[in-house]
Length: 270
Image (cartoon, rainbow, N blue to C red; front, top):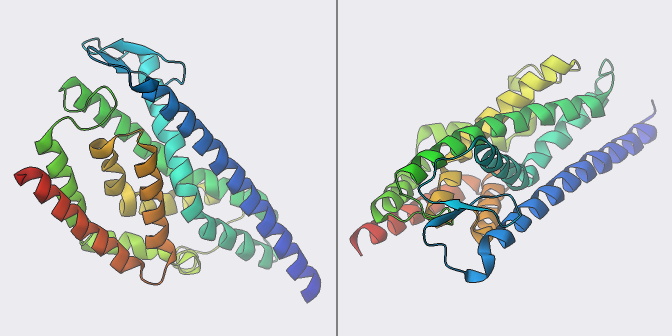
């Protein structure tokens, strides 16, 4: 394949990967906005009830235990929300994977391999979503979050904020962030491009695990500000993007951490 032909194919691959990721992210955000609009309910009183994130105006008595379908709907909410939030910051890794695969003579089908890598990546965030659903269930059972899925307890809110701020300064945060900030370096450290389905899934899952390790505590902040608070969902997605894609990402993380500590202390002592 000539140099000009290869560059044209690489450009086509970039368009395909970026376009597919953009469609997935747009659909995820549309679902989140639909749920958020449904949960606002025009500001009506929710006393004695809680919202079920189905997009259909469903409510359940606050004292009633979760049904299996409510658990599934909350899990779906978290999973789709994580896809929408993390897709933009995952783009450089997916584009790099497709490029390395196309340059590798034995690559086979790099676009299909990239799709399987993405599936592994989002599988890691699906696991996080399951854990978040269980945590939300436990907090709701203890009446620590209100009907709109925001913290109704000052102590809980301050603890989460301070813990999140401290985590932003820890070595494990730095180690996970380093893996997320250098797509090519990540591939070289972990065996490079893999053309088979299982290998792609495993590598995508590993990268996703590092990403969860980098960002999980930021997602926990949604329990403070409101799980369906669209403004904060967007701000946290932007923060993740700045941490991963800008040259000063480490300092963005630390400044955000300091801000969380200050906010948590203010909440605790105000």
